[in-house]
Image (tube, rainbow, N blue to C red; front, side, top):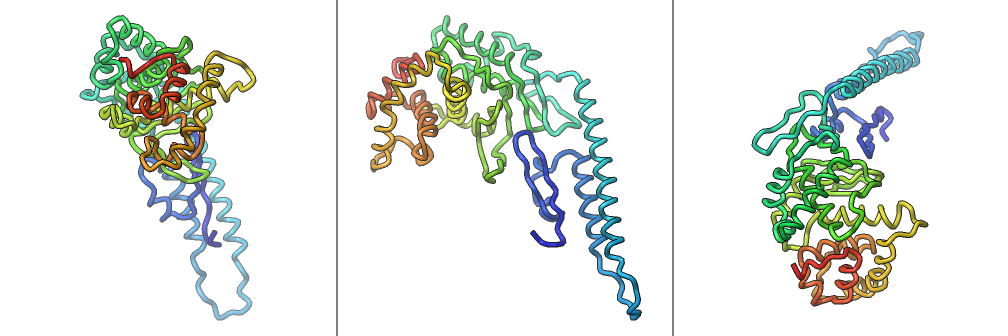
Length: 349
């Protein structure tokens, strides 16, 4: 790094990012700059650095003492004071949030504004959506739900309600829509609808970004990912994919498929369960299809699916629901194994 630069680490919910100059910080999107207290802190650090780094006035006196150590000590002291103030402000904000009531999520036409925080927090246990509200939203956006029989729709809405109550929703924007928790929860219920256990209890948090977002180590741009106890999604891509239910692309289903793997295969690897037992049938055929796709000139799976077996599984789930007839026709053994794992048959709906 340049000698006159000062690293400042920006912390996010599941990642961190380092900037080395005020210009680099100012070039970041507003969504990554944090709240006013954070911005004031970072601006102060670099302004102080510019002051300390300013060249001294030349002197003809060769005996003029070297003041570099004094300015270095002054700089360290200033940074310490600013950091202390910043931490105090952050603690005050955290205490205010802890005592604040959870706002209600409104419809797309009536929007809830958050004046101070850089993201909205909704405790699922405090959200009180009626069956009618869930039905209306799912009937409008979720093609899978539209094809269910009436009694199945009642079961589906009840499961969505239970799923919402078991999660905390973090919306990284100043606006929140009730469609967000309803539809994202519905995507989880969609792939688990044939399973007895559907709450994915390993995941306590659903993180919703308005669009693509940054991730670090390595630095990359994502539209969805599963990490720790959080499932993160880009709302723009999620909604777009549900508005195009037959193109084989659905970030919601993709990430929920990864969450299923973590829940039943990875989080407690030594513990047996029915999903793991059924998944073994899929595991016996997926490598054959993966190798066939890599050498095929007429692929059904995209390049990302061919990176590794986990991405292949998540993409197979997307195709299972959005292109079931094509998947069944081209790879019948794979389709049968997935029908067994998920205990449902979209091609027959």
